[in-house]
Image (cartoon, rainbow, N blue to C red; front, side):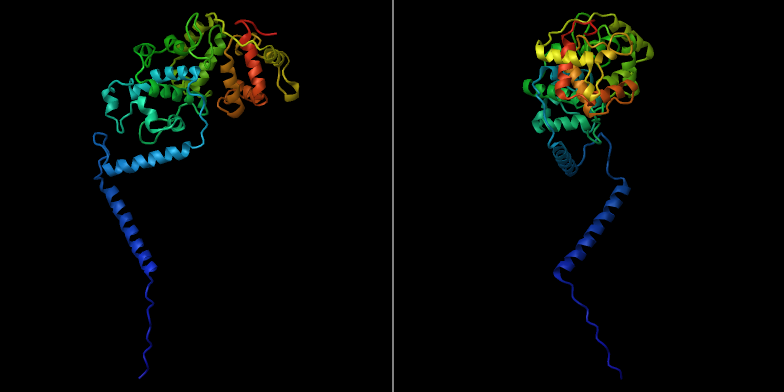
Length: 363
């Protein structure tokens, strides 16, 4: 009789047994998760809140995601009056439609959203300035909080953050601020809230004065915002709702206004350098003279005299580092020129044009 061969089975080590057990557990959880999802028993209706465990996980996921994504963002001076005054107008005209007037009950429609839009007086209680900026700029998935509608416009986002910072410090704003609120307003009232009315400068030096600009240029600018050729979280939503007739009426109105003078800087060396750039350009950098286009002849080119230096510097900076308005021929041209100017040159030519009386073409 042949001798039987004994086959020995190797006993699994402790770690191998743990690995096999873990695979079974993971598999069971995976299958259980599929069964749970397909069963449809989880109520996704906004009439009921999430389970406490679900809220706990979502909160940690949200806060950690925002904190990591916002790390390293450089924060400007949030006490800058030009910054928060501009942000106030957007906040009162747009943000309050969902978040409500600070310190007041929400509209019943928005109070029944899930998650409920928070009172933004407390925006800085749980988040830093850079984190608030990130949320306003990028929005939050599945919350109703949209991303900023003007891609590549951190200057606009920071203005809203600056105003929220002020709200957090001062609490509920005065009733007089709500008098400027025009969430549903259209036409001249909406434009005037930021750009100013007759004999009034814009609400902030970061906003261009539209007074006395050519009708053709004003109409084209709004049409480009409406068509997505220019990026602005402020202007795009307003322009989207404007008809061709309303755009034409707006252009006629502002073109007929006289541009009020502005208190300009008087540094002789700075203004002399700016005048040189405006009249002669910078041949070594292939920068043409500003007056070659902004000379008051072409109705598609805005005159620059009397515009805020801060506004012009901001635009040149945006053109230097972004293609936010390169879709139009005029935008592509200015983007090329802007990238050829350094910060000191942009400051000089902006200060020079600010120093000119409105209506003056230049040297």
